[in-house]
Length: 195
Image 1 (cartoon, one colour):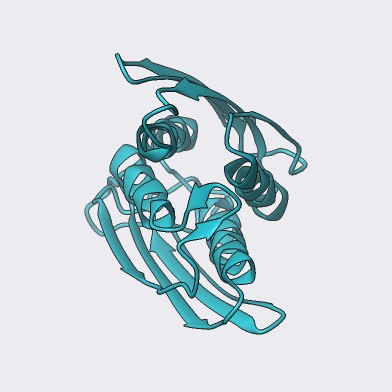
Image 2 (cartoon, helix red, strand yellow; image 1 turned 180 degrees about the vertical axis):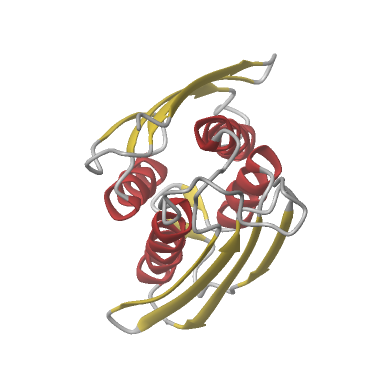
């Protein structure tokens, strides 16, 4: 089927390039100056089974906020482009994912309407040099760029690394389910006829 996209975005703060292929093998090539963020994007690719390439540069001497949020926006735009008219897709996806003591829930609707409901608090403000408040900013950028509805909940967890990774894995699993082609007739899964 070859659902793929390549999107770039350059501002005075960041320079982001993202390529995705939904019918991938979960392979990733991630180049950003933020180690923990690289780990999370690799995790996202692996568990969503999409191939993902990200090259992101930005004003990290300020902090990582612009880089992380803009990467979310561009990844969302690439996802939206790769999905095209969304004919035949499942549309909805959900996942409940444990990682040791952490437990995360993700539910999404590839609806064409952007909304993020994010409920998570972390016991640490940083993992490595990554500010944990940027987890929400990444997913906010992602739903803005991708035009979909996402509910993310951290249901349990004391280790912040585990908690964040569980959220990324839950989202990845839900995304894999929602983007699957399940209707071979190719109808749009909406009473409106469009998404």
